[in-house]
Every structure is written in structure tokens, then in C-alpha cells.
Amino acid sequence: MKNIFACTALLLLIGFSSFTVSQEGKPDTVQTGIYGICGQDSSNRTIELNLMKGHTFTYYNVSYVDGTANCMGKWKEENGVVILFDHNNPFPIHTKWKIESGGTLKSIKSQGTGMMFFRIWYMGNCK
Image (cartoon, rainbow, N blue to C red; front, side, top):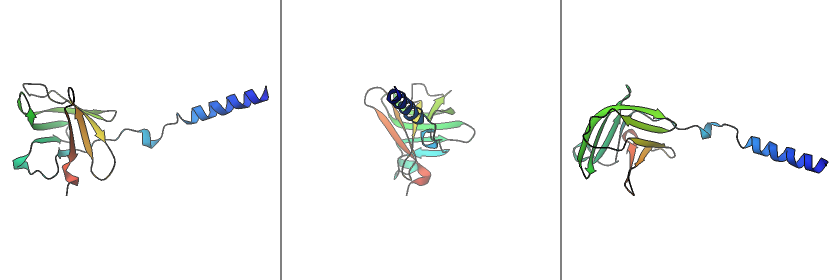
């Protein structure tokens, strides 16, 4: 009986310790500024997302089938995801961008329908 109690107590202790909240489990926060593809200058860009401090954004992307996205709107951050809304683009754009961490380059990524996805980097860290 003591062995069963000891094993149960040990399993509960291990179980509760695995659910503690740590800083590592906390979602990253997005850095405001321009995100795009490193190595492209602004005259030859294919995609660019500028997240501004007033929670407004500008977005430019030439890779849509419907045409070029060139719009502005508002953004918010929820649980490690940047959400674009109230944009003035005439067709749908990628509105959810997951914040990625790791390394010195901060990036965000978005997946559309099927296999189409974008990953863009914070341009302030590009060399």
C-alpha cells in the first residue's frame, strides 16, 4: 500500500512539475519595423511588411495571382501571432503571421492555402 501511495505521489509530482509556466513557453513579441527578404533593395522588392508603432502597417507583395498587394491597415499581436486587419486591399492577403525566434535574424511566417507560404525577416538585422 505504501508503494502504491509513493508511486502515485511521485507521478503527480512529475506531472505537476511539467506544467509549470516558464519564460521559454511565453510567445515572442514582434519587433516593429520593416520585414522583407534580405538582400533585396526597395526598388527590387517582391514582398515587404512594415509594422509601425501606432499599430498600423503597410504591405507590398507582387506574388499574388490576383495582382499586386499594395495596402495599409491595422495590426495586433495575439499569442505570438501578428494579425493584419482593416486593410484596403481589393483581394484577400495573408493576415496571420507567426512570430519565429532563434538566431540573430527575427522572422515572421504566414501560410496561405495549400503549400503557399511566406517567411520574411526583420530588415534591421540583415547584413
